[in-house]
Length: 151
Image 1: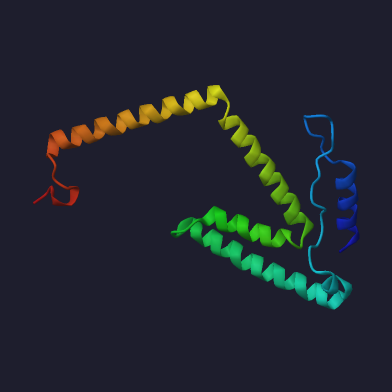
Image 2: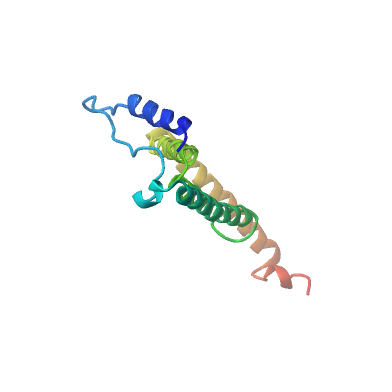
């Protein structure tokens, strides 16, 4: 690891967030490499380990980006690649922590009764519009399938 990642580890330890209950500090995983000890002991081995983790993570992220336009769970695979990178790189760990925090905040907002009520109303309106459109289609064309209408 380099001096920058050591500084981030120290800063993360000092600025650990406090939970809302009881004022106790929330325990988060330490930033930095999670490589086995015998790999960390040898600098060339650790560097080759980091290159391998980077290449594997890059392959998974590229596959996820391709899945954004092709069939497949693109975002899920991209986050999987980020998780692979986070086993070794501090910047990826920080990105994943930020992402988890934002997802948790979004989930809390979605559970808010006002937001939930709005979402239910919008879903109901959308379903009513779809039912009206299907009704108009059946009234105009009958139960014919779209690709046999012209025949």
